[in-house]
Image 1 (cartoon, rainbow, N blue to C red):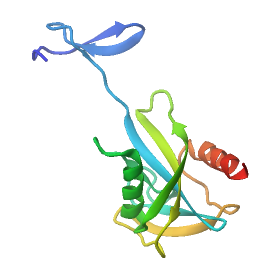
Image 2 (cartoon, rainbow, N blue to C red):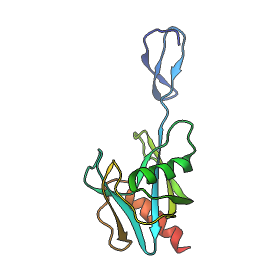
Image 3 (cartoon, one colour):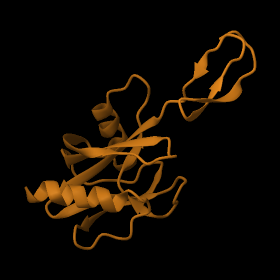
Length: 155
């Protein structure tokens, strides 16, 4: 706040940046992303990524929530950008986070309100996969997300 250089310090057992001049502590907030599992019959829609990380791998439509944007609106927007589909957001599957990873995921179920998907600028392709024949997914949290989704579907 005062323009002094920040220094590292231990505050309540956590390494933080603090200004020695005014004492202001800098808190680095996490980044929120949305992941959307789009259902159709007994299939899920996946996108083949055309952005890092994991270019060329199949994954769920996903992306970052913009500051001031409603999380559900971000989910609808990201699906539209990546697949061209208009979706209706359903229940929240869960929130997922990992220590040392600044990204927190809000994962939703959705159903398509429009016809066939098309690849957007951040995707190489889009494809419906039977839920029992999903390709290997790239992110550590994907297996847990699928297990939680299957648990919700079973109830």
